[in-house]
Image (cartoon, rainbow, N blue to C red; front, side, top):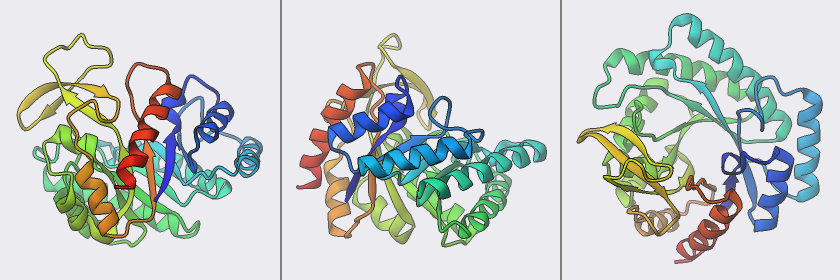
Length: 282
């Protein structure tokens, strides 16, 4: 397995400084959050060339661009076409940066509230994204995420069948799956199988204290609940079964750390990287 830091954790820094800090921490790569001020559809070719040169100088890979394009399932046709244009510009950026994967948002509502037409619309546009990505040899990723069409491994397989492209895969995120109330260990990894192309790691816990720093609310099958982000090992997400499953299935792709607690991004990543190396080594 190879480990990356999510640049969104270091959003208080320039993307150049975020890359240097990521290298300092010992990561193999950085997953760039495609939002201002790290990267956007408007980032120039000159800026991309400079970022690529820095990644080579640092020997720090850029495996994924985490875009915020998509949300096709609930978008109007005009909105979907506009965000698809943004996706195409970011796909070109992925090619310049030698990223092999690009995240796209499927959209909502929660899978347990969604109708077939939500999946059909998302599948149409994700299929368009996957077709465009072929020319760049890039995989399109959909993250298993609470409050979206893809909250569980079964939801992912449903969407995958509709898109039917080898260029589309999924991001396993145990933190999100914990929030959604679904299994996030061996069975989820087994179900996703070859469709599992990337992994995100973060810890969370349910709380009754909505004033806790960083706390947020989500609609789940239990109703509206409050959650707090935690450093790895300090919340309620047990990542040991996940890493056991990844080892047993021979997963050798990227794992990105994205803790969202209030401490400094550098300290969050340092703590979680130390913890995840122990998990990865069993």
